[in-house]
Length: 490
Image (cartoon, rainbow, N blue to C red; front, side, top):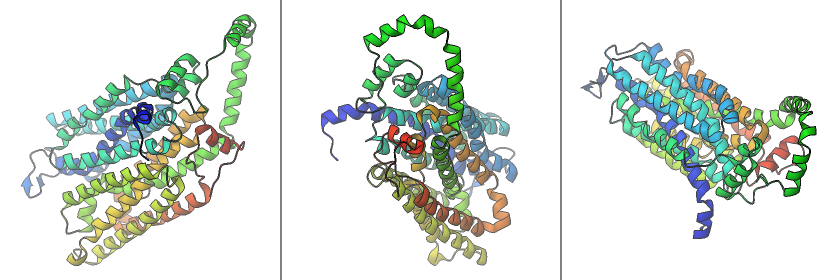
């Protein structure tokens, strides 16, 4: 669809807000891929046949230390997700994103400065703090975007965070291949700086302002974002209603305590209702499937995986190719999300990852039978990983985050977003922390065939249980899960 100039002027505030808030996900992508190139840089005294002058004086580190350096990012993110509902609820979406950007800056400074005296604990603290920023960022960004974009644009704009996440991974791979681990940490200061600066010029979410009684500000915010046709747009109180409210203030004050207690009881009862638990359970399963698809192992341990499988292609070249493919494929999901729908993309994603990860497991099996991968099929591991990233990037990469902002009812969106993010990050932590132990117990091919089975299970879960949310505004989706109105499903 080609947009004319008036249409572009109408949607540019939503696009601008999406791009600025998604700088948080760009930072997350760089921090996720940091370990893939930084761990060899700080841990190997000799790298690519040359003396590595940036390696830590105590390198090589014990495998347990390296495992903690890799896995402390999701560990810190679990803590960040647990506390994210508080700033989201009491400060607002905009200040929460500014807070996350500040934490990212502190975290990367700690990692970079650790090089001055080879302080491994400082690296670990920096990774934990970076994880806290990730945990706060994940729900805050998608909630802010879902509340500041029109339903007709939410699918495309809702995929922008995943696109910038993929871009961050690519930048981490490409820059990390040419600079030292601490220099990459300093470069990583740029995206959160843009995030903080940009958010200073953006208004708060109209949904949050309305729920906190700031109706006039909510109207201004909604007008700034051009959300006049959305059913959730706030309306100003009429003059008559304002006068009536002023005349009855005295009598209402006496019943405020009883009303507050009744409202709190109602909120608690509705929290355990089907309208809340059903979308929460769907999101949690999607987050588990995303983490345990096997792709995150490839993101965090790309160089190690290529080295382990014995591909004849240079590890760093293959890593850069994978990053480019992931970025291009995620860009395709931005176009397809509102055209093809969420469900079909997730099912295609599951099938592509099932086949590619399964064949990659076969490559590991052949590697276990032979000392080296035969040259005639030395290209196969790279092709399998490329296909796996394509499948992941068009479906299970961006869609679970997009759906997280769509499924949850407005009243509970903060806490449910936090719970869903904690699920994602907890499963990711266990995936990374015990990957080495699992490969010892099950071998590489056994682990990757386990991922294959999980991906296949994801296909059937989406087919049987996940409703389509394409083209639906947030009120319609909430009505569906509460049983007030049914949407077209499978």
